[in-house]
Image (cartoon, rainbow, N blue to C red):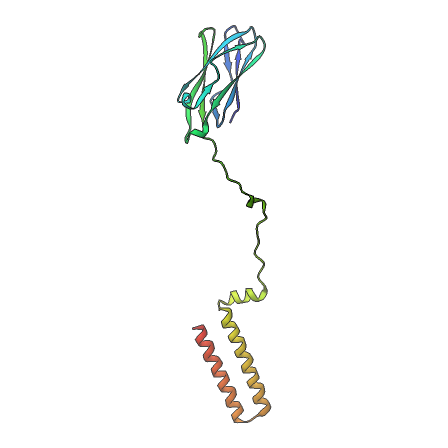
Amino acid sequence: MSREATVHVNRGSADSLETAVGTLETRESFDLRLESHGPPAHVHCRLGGDLERIASLETSNYYVESEGETFVPVHVATESIDRPVEGVLEVLTGYGSESLSIPVVAKPAPAEVDVDDSLAKPAQREPEPSALERAVAASGLEPATLVVVALGIVAVAIATTTAATIGGPVAMAGVGIVAIGFCVAVALLVL
């Protein structure tokens, strides 16, 4: 996207106009630079096509000093459009005997981005899960279920230790009852 277009005035001969600009694409206002390569000249500028709706010139007639340059501001209101607008910028000299047209495509201004103070704050990172949290998540079971399983294992271990210490068939039956209760509790929680 260019912010300036140059037209050479009187470069090869009197009242001649030349430009190297093909199609000028813009999203904002720009300048037309009239560069003289010879005697002074009067240059007339005008807008054509749909470009007239969204662009304007301060004045249409400009005087270009000998070997000097004159800047012509072209005000383009691209914020008022939602699709490209095409037109021409016409430059005439020698009372209209010499002219050239520069195709202009005015594209919509980019949408504004709202920036608030939250962008200045660093992003909050979640803490890394502990090994226990990762194991609980990997098991697919609820943490409460895992606590019941752990307490059941402790109960079976105590019952087994007690039965081994006391001995006898009644102690062994107690271990069996605790073990069966543990298995039923786990089955009810998991299923």
